[in-house]
Length: 154
Picture 1 (cartoon, rainbow, N blue to C red):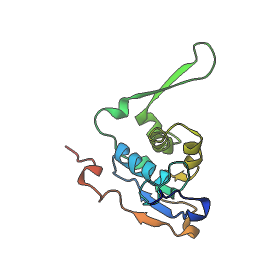
Picture 2: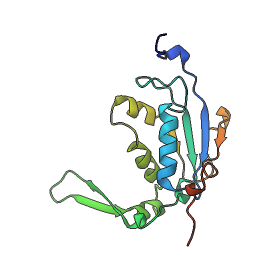
Picture 3: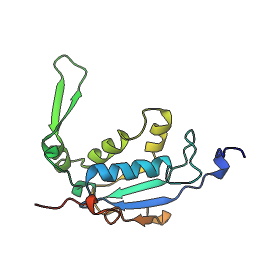
């Protein structure tokens, strides 16, 4: 028996819609990363882009556990003394809250050319509206997969 290795002709991509409202960020990112890579498929081949196209809506309503809202995110401008920081809470309340979800998913993928290609299959939107209705995406209810996916208010 030979090991199956998928070819581009064997790949069929679906469109998946995930609502991130009230879902814990890390659990959401791990499920999205798995769907982007295609590891949920029986025909998974590590060197092929066989993951689905994933649409995440309500990225601004994602939940963070513990004290992660106050965690600083650093970047450097490239100039001397140009280190800057912003907390995760400030990013979520700012102009681009979808960047928090994008970075969480990106950091769960391997750092290579294939994962950069797979990240192009991810679309994240802060609100409930998205321009991909024509693709008729399947709804994946991440919130009901596990009772730990939602943050319980104490």
